[in-house]
Amino acid sequence: MITPEFLLFAFFAVYSFLSLGTVFLLATNVDSIDDHLPETDERMSRLPMKTVSVIIPCRNEEDDIRGCIDSVLNQDYSRLEVIVADGNSEDGTWDILQSYGDRIKAIREEERPAGWTGKNWGAYLGYRASIGEILLFVDGDMVLSPETVSKSVMSMSHERADLLSLGPRMVMKGFWEKLMLPLFAQFIMLLYMPPLMNRDRGRRAMANGQYMMMDRKAYEKCGTHRAISGKIVEDVNLAKLFRKNGMKIRFYWASGYLSTRMYRNGGELWEGVVRDIQGEVGRKYHVHLAGILYLVLTFYLPFWMLYFSAAGANFLLLVIALMSITFILLRMLIFQIGTESPAYMALLFPVSIGVYTLISVTAFLRAVGGYTVVWKKRNYSMTRE
Image 1: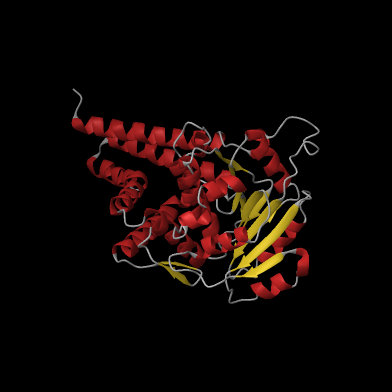
Image 2: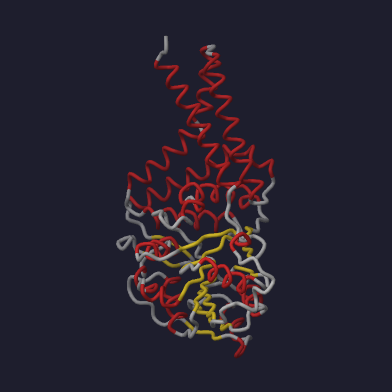
């Protein structure tokens, strides 16, 4: 006789298996930009030589901005202008920008209108100062290989895309970076499903704000950054606008061409992820709670099952619990290896999930309490999210 207990255990086993299968498919079917380039040795000579305006909004980036600008100036794409919009940095960023002279166009942020986030305002100011038919928005902590822009233009032209966004290799040096960023990448992949998003018939839309190349006319048709002026997670919302306007968007991984160190310590990582969750989910409390419940049930319930199986001598429960924990470990291992983080850290998933759960709870409580979103010593109201 099939009991409700057996059905529950079977459901959880199937769910765990499908969860692992989904993650495995995502990890093994990742679109790379190299897979979307024209197959000819004369690719460079056939490039549409449009001017590319590289726009770098930045604030307090004295540790990274020089490496970013140098890598942009070292591109093998000849028709390039570099515009850096400084958000009134409080460190030495502006002095560094001044040292480049006329090799770049450095602009200081004008008074930011009410309702605008700093990054969106900086990106918009850079756009207004640009002349390129192609716009490339790059974060100040990105480092590009010399052929990144040319390959991006080739891919964008070959795919006839209006928006091309690339995912970089994440440089991880500290303990918390190595522990948390693979998990963060896993959840982003599961949430947005890039392989499915690259299908034009789909409704999914995402972009990586660290590197977004787009056709100028398409960007203007979508309303520019003015249309998302108050959005904290500007990249996803901009991609949604492109999709809404019937335009073609593409997201590819380009770890051989881009790299970045997103966070330098645990404090920056905590603030950054809280910002992303609070900014994107906003006041949709049910979404916050669903995310927290997903974390608790998916990653911690197997341990409770293990405890109760031992206490009640329930062999079936023991098997299901061990299977579930094994699936979780494999799931974590895939992304540890995929992001070039130490594989052994997959064993620490109870810690990483615990920290991520606390981050999610913090974002939820800040949303409930009506607290502003904090990023780089600036506070943004949730009223427009």
